[in-house]
Amino acid sequence: MGEVPPNPDPVSPVAGPEACREARLNAFRAWLAEAARHTPVVDVDWAAAVPLEQAGPHGQIVHGPGASVAVLDLGDGALTAQGVEEAVRALLEDPRAGLPELPVGRVTASSYFSTDAAWSASACDVVSTCPADEEPYVYDRDDHLAVQDAARALAPLSDQGSWLVTHPYDPAVTTHLALPEEVYEQFMGLGPGRRDQAMRTGTHQRLYGWLAFPDVWRPGDLPLQSDEVLFPRIQSYEVVVP
Image 1: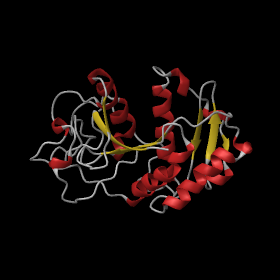
Image 2: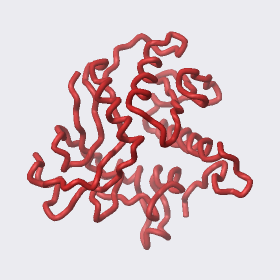
Image 3: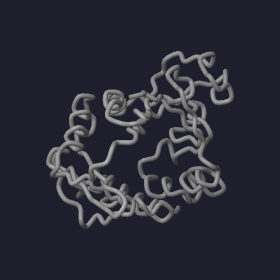
Image 4: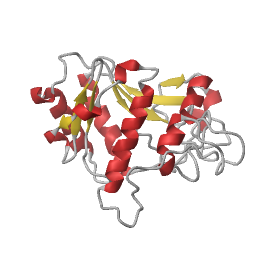
C-alpha cells in the first residue's frame, strides 16, 4: 500500500533484459524529483539528458540550474575499484561532460558494506551507537566494496576528502551524523500495523519498496543485524582525508 510499482515491471513475462535497469533508473528519477520539492538545487529535467559515452552503454548526464546529475552504468555485479575510479576521473576531466569548472568539495560513497566479521563494541568511540550485545547489519555486496575502494583513491581530488558510509562498529569510523526524526520519517516512514501490510509513506519506501528485503526497508536508528536495518537514522562515516 502506497508503494509505487516498478516501471517497467522487471518480473513481467514479457520483460526483456533491460527492464530492471530501466525500472531502477525510473525510480531514481522519481526519487530525485521528490527530493527537489524541499531541496530545489537537485531539480533537473531528465528529458534534457544526453548520453555519457565514458560512463558505460547507458551512461547519461543532465544539467539543471543548480546541479548536474550523472548516471554511470558500469555493470551490475561487475564493478572494480579501478573501473569506478577511472570512470569518475574521466567524467571530471572530460570537457564534453559539460561540468562547471568548480573545485570538488567532497566525495561521498553511500555504498554501505559490512561482512560477518567479529566486530567489537570496544572499538567504538561513541558507545551509544554500538550496543555491546549487537552486531552490524551484514551487507557484503562486492559492487559496494569496489565503490568504497574507489572513493578512498579519489580522496586527494577533493577539499574535504572522501566520506564512506559504514557502521558504528567499524574501527575506521571517525564521524557520526544523525538525521532529524521528522526528516528520517519523510524518507523511511511506514504506517501503523504489520510491516508487510503497513502503508508506505516515506519516499524511499514508496519508490524503492519493490527492491526492499525482507519485506519493507526496515527503519531504525542504527544498522543492526537484529533489526535488519540497512538505512539507519544515525549514519557513520569513515573519512579519508585528502
